[in-house]
Length: 395
Image: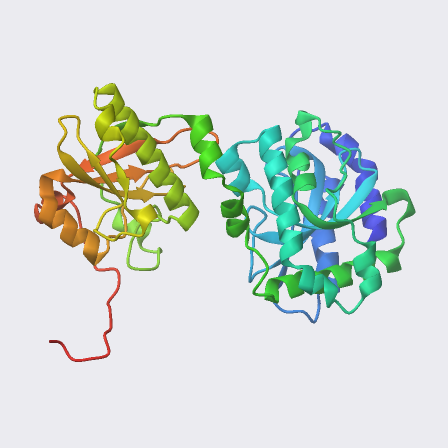
């Protein structure tokens, strides 16, 4: 292993000058074929593990990587957390770390200094969630060897290396090696210990998922204060999906953009709608009504909608909010209680769709008035998503 690592480090600067990847070159062979194969030999006897690597996505990266994924958590570098060998951008250091995928954080917060700080905080939260795993790990000398600080890939914070800076911030545990002084036996021993730690983390029910890390990072109050009032527009009818293109999607819905809101995403969507509603009424000269808006969900009321508000004429309206990080919401889960309320209130009942929720920009709110009418008129397709099994006879 160490000889291939040294060889790659020596030829990568020249290979990098090609700009685009070239499968005919030795550097390409080492990063995509040889190093993953070497990991595979070290992984023999362990289940759930697959190997992967990258020298860039079409364009050569300053710091290539090769990794081991536990398929119970992830099978790709853009999801979950995994064990990865990272080359520093000067190709002088090799870092072995358990780190999490940064894509969800970058999608939500953007790629900025602020978002990187949030990622670092998330890595610390992950460390805290696995304290019992490290405390009970058989080889405590290995645990003491680990760094809990962000890894060092020699980026020095240069935005030219945004990808590698993300790897540094997302490091949960890491060990750094001088490539010129690699020791094969040490390399393998550390790796096998790291795999053991990684799989113990995966097996622990207390280990935070990346989705949980992201949700935990969201401060609704600060996001609302920073973003201000979102825009709103009337619902734009959807084009039905092509049955052929969606035939491989499992579950009761044939669209991947059904609103998949977590509790935190839902709360953020509702807060954005509250901000919009208050601003709407104040601009209409009804500040008195703005103070009377009720956030039913926050009060744990279950009337069949989330927010009781008013239209600009002063008439009470009922608003059910559906929020998602997806760019577009093509369908939502409607509870029986919400459906009954929509049918009862008709013209005064609204669905507010808050899609593409981010912490870095305001989403637009899509407004559907009287969804019951659209359901009855077959403009919307209402499909039972589940059945409630009650353990007594029908009365």
